[in-house]
Amino acid sequence: MSLVLVGSPACLLHDMDPEHPEQPARLHSINDQLLISGVELSLQFLDSQAATKEQLLLAHDKDFVEEVFNKSPSEGQQWLDDDTLMMPHSLTAALHAAGAGIEAVNKVLPREEECPEFMPVTTAFCAVRPPGHHAEHARSGGFCIFNNIAIAARYALEVRGLKRVAIVDFDVHHGNGTEDIFKDDDRVMFCSSFQHPFYPFSGTDTTKAHIINTPIPAGTKGSEYRELVHHWFAKLDEFKPELLFISAGFDAHAEDDLGHLRLQEADYEWISYELKAIADKHCEGRIVSMLEGGYALGALARSVLTHIKVLMA
Ligand SMILES: [Zn+2]
Image (tube, rainbow, N blue to C red; front, side, top):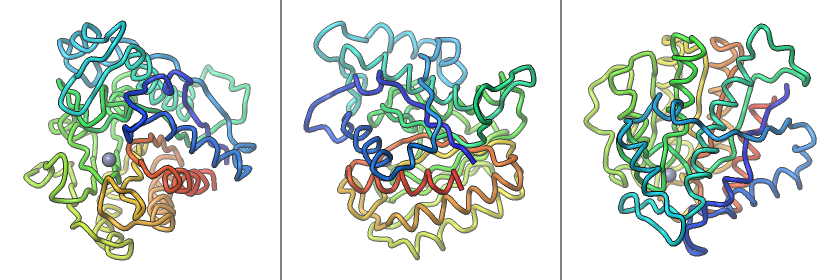
């Protein structure tokens, strides 16, 4: 099965500081790994368009979107919040990162009248930055300007007419922005595993049945992690999503200094297979996976390769 890799050169333009962990080299390392592995020969590539304001409003507050556009600097830098910095090209990068999710949804859900020139695809990986899952309905946060996966999920529901979708987030940090956007929208099942206590110090007081938060103690290894998240699969099976989204952050890897979990590539392979089985059963195999965190460049690139290979299998 073919996979479409969605991205944009614009995502490389957002460059906060050579020392900043959320840096363009993350995408370069992923691309290098795909090239070296030979996998890229089997991939389809798609350049993303910039998301429109109307599409951003599927998940975000109008005043917040206007504030981001107004704050976008033509030179120098502008802080959006304590962690999130905008440079002159950051808005362009953020719009293309959000646009990638929408392109991916359209690619795995081709319209009937569309006659695909290429081999049809059921899975997509969006190699984009800035990441998105900390961006709330009306607030940026944690290196995230817009919530890429939330915009894509709402697009699938509101524009493409799906009734239920699921988002699984295995980044080391809680997907607080995604929870905020969908806390009152039970068309979306959201499963998030995250180191706790840890930034953004959220996710432990949730009472909604469609929000499934799984706090994980620092130092947890893959075998223990697998036991802690295993209950997700029965819940997803019961929910029967029509499209499965993955907030694919790889900063829970043992080599990643931004977190303190001990996952390895084999653990990402395991969870990718489990999620693919859910998608094969309920979603006609359709998965849209979007890059979130992951800052140890070697571990990030190897983990993404592992994840993509499963989605292609
Ligand atoms: Zn993270």
